Length: 546
Image 1 (tube, rainbow, N blue to C red):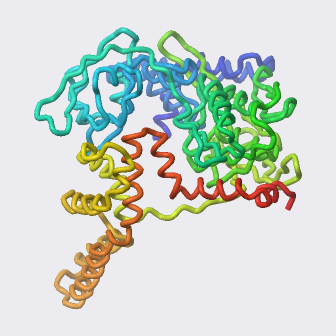
Image 2: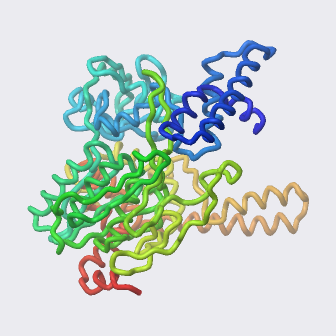
Image 3: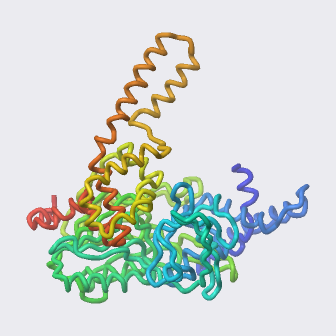
């Protein structure tokens, strides 16, 4: 495999290598470029002219480029037209589509929610509708990305969705005209109690800072005195959006983040340009987890370094690399890691090991201990470590299976017509027992803790000696043990299952606002953040040098 990669990494090398070294005046580097570029071109020419089989040059070219980039960091990628949609959504803040959020439920492509004022919403598409065909093509083997590419398209063009709806025998066809759909980055903002505001930011696109400004101003009008900024599972996005958002929190003139790259124009320092719109006496808690990356880590790390907010949750992903998109032609481009970003304490958030040692020329050790503005010790070399780490409970078997198989969502689709509000749902004490009956009727892929290991051992013991009475006797006892655990498992998880049922109903009736308000009752990160924010002594103590 390594040999194949070495042979096939040649295509478009002249474009890529020239791009990487643009602006560098070193004769030695140019000499090395010419030498290696010539080698790559010679290898490619010999393969194409002498290889025994005819080769599809377009497919070979794409494979060669991908193999060449495979040894670099995972963010340096080659993109063709259909693969550039995600980048364009971030940079333009919009896309052509019909306005639906889709997911896989019961292994079927399902409408999670239609967006307000969208073609899908106006046409009558509902949450829970199964998308069986797109433009006459069956979706049975499609993943979410496959479907999204087909549903999105140029404004004014049409797409036909064939829908299977609960309670309907025949498929329902919807012919939708695509429109420009704005990307919404803040999925919810509102007050969790009389004093605590909450903002959940899901990505950093062109729209993020405008949405954040409006959310902060609205919460201040609601007399917010503490803010929870939820960046959990936010993969990042545009650096400029993160810098603009930090401007809302940080005093004018403070260094927020800087980048260092090979080209001089990539060495940039970002400084807060205006007075913050969030008053200094509004305390901040930032929620992060292992899914918080890139721009999310800039926000959390900068607020931590400048002692402006407390970080709560679990260590973040550790992506401190900056990418630049270079267009090769109208349909193709390459996204290259061109710089690293550093936050005020001097920390590089990027976790080590993203490049093989054999191709990395600079192997100098990086500092790992830094200090915040107030003298607190913080750790570098791999993500942001929270000021308060929260350990989450392991998912229990029934809850895990219910999430994995989409049972909460499907149960709500079958029972939503029985209620007119989430309050009615909460008052129905029989609902949890209806869900128990639903679980029993489902083909539930359920294993108790340790049962998978036991089943593997059981298979090995049968292979060892399937006639042994002693082995069979021991296995009968263990079978009985796991059956007894499974029999009582529902009672153990009853309260938790009831809570998440209510969360799903709240989402159906009141959208993301309803989901957040109900889920926050049992959300350990939110509860920890609120406890810290509501206690001034605990909050201020966090920022004292230890």
